[in-house]
Length: 331
Image (cartoon, rainbow, N blue to C red; front, side, top):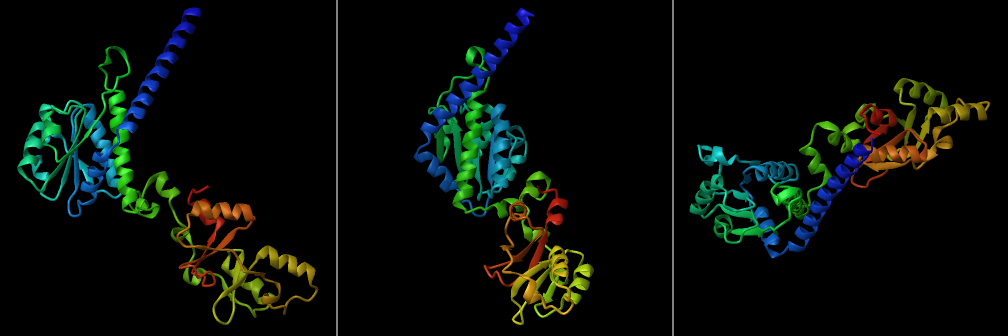
């Protein structure tokens, strides 16, 4: 039991050492961000009619795949090009409008040399090199390069790509997010590229879920309580949106309100809604996230919200009910 405990302690210590090595690598990367980073961003942003094609070999190739996926999902059309396949016909995927990014720690990977030569011959193709060797073929032949610091890899003998690959990953994220912010890429743009999965659910707006058109339980301010009871039962939403003669939303009344009014007044049948409604109901913009709308309902202890657009709060274009949000698995 004692030896097992000692072994467990050693494992935990090794794990923490690996993480510390990688933290140190990220700190070192952070201090190396310079003007060359700005040049990379400018080249990518100026790629209006082409794509960003990313390649690497080995662990750098895996990182390149992640770069391409992140770029594509944040507004920079991109794909990963297998270096071996490029030498056997897939080089044709690179056009004169494209930007090519090659990731290689040594800058001397044999598999990348054909892509370097192809890109160098076509002066319209912008080649970006990501390497740690200033005297490498990749660095010397790139239109612009990012010189990665030399990192001490985690693990014995400094041979397993760990610190260097985590730094490559972080650099790709920083490039992608910098381009995203420069384009004013919003959560709604992001949502277009993520129509499925939990992320899509999280990004749903009330516009995706709201009831519109004839489904909105509009009633006139002069409607009697008797008619209001019939209408609220027919609409089956438990709420009525009260409008004036101008078509402006001026109030709201729920089935709970109607029950309380019925108990308060002995003769309530001919009472008009404008006398008993709740004035100035809460209205939110159609682009509001459904999750935020749900938080408003929970805070205010209500079950429905009016929806408007263009800051015209009195012009209701829809209604969102708590049940509609919960049915969409948003909580």
